[in-house]
Length: 278
Image 1 (tube, rainbow, N blue to C red):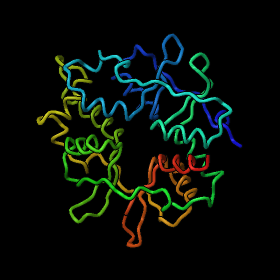
Image 2 (cartoon, one colour):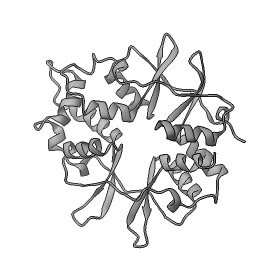
Image 3 (tube, rainbow, N blue to C red):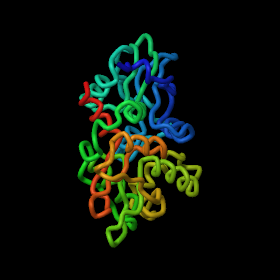
Image 4 (cartoon, rainbow, N blue to C red):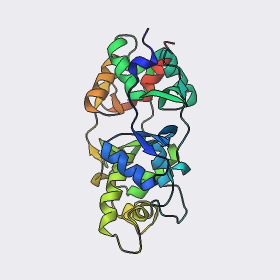
């Protein structure tokens, strides 16, 4: 039986005194989706890319993100004992609707693991247990490639999703947009309009929520990641895990009999599959 301690790794951290802007920059610089928040070198919470994304585009105050403390958006860490089985850990993550678990306790953080680590584990240890069709999500959220970024973000927030598939006027699927794409374009385009009166973080937020900002003037096709990694519904779920890990993606399109994408299989679905083995 494989246990939590065997799949954990050392967490990347950020000080609780950091600003929301500093969180965004560090997530992008490290190309990571979460950071453990520390106070005097002790863990006190966690912040994820998804947390930042939902906060960034729904928070309406005039306070600059450079001055807004990380403590306003961080969440508490969920812990598990290092000897807990991987499948029981997966079950706990699904029940709590979280994407990571810390190993140890508040006084001794041994490590952390995520849905990515569970996906790696499944790819190695769970071949031929399930097919993709057993755990795929049938519904596919899409947006036209000519939609403004403001419209794209509104749809992602409405459905509480962290990625969305783009399509053309003929309903052909073209690519994917994630929160990371928004962070990157906001930083890049925000700099162009930067003045002495506004901080970079003001542009990150206001540029998308304002009808005059670059979120309204930029369209989906300009920032989307072109192409969608996919897999057939009758293939082994472990193979789907390998494709996700090999290409560093969080989800795959699932091809139906027509050869078109008819569903999604994500790391959350993999976690559900592992939880069923508990």
